[in-house]
Length: 94
Image 1 (cartoon, rainbow, N blue to C red):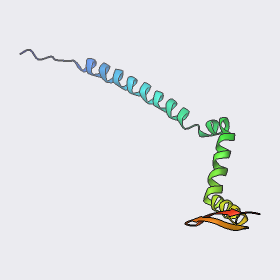
Image 2 (cartoon, rainbow, N blue to C red; image 1 turned 135 degrees about the vertical axis):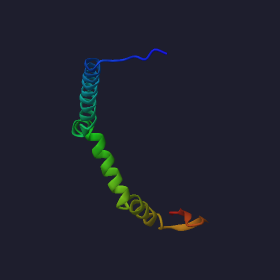
Image 3 (cartoon, one colour; image 1 turned 180 degrees about the horizontal axis):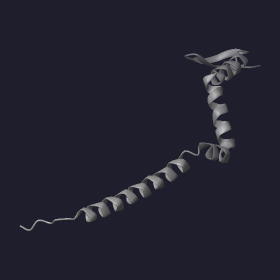
């Protein structure tokens, strides 16, 4: 079996090549991460959609759906009850 023997200069050269490749890879990753972390640019591009979504989530979390349904349910309690199914009823508004 023939063993490969490398000189110190060959090893230094290989190490320098690997170091340069590693530095190039790190620079490439930094560029990709900075582009991915640009949230403000993405937010500005989609501001109307984000604002609408935030308003909708705030409305629901504040109980807006329940309050709206209670408002309409109170308005429907006028008149004579014709049919009742659980908490729902059909009214005759003569």
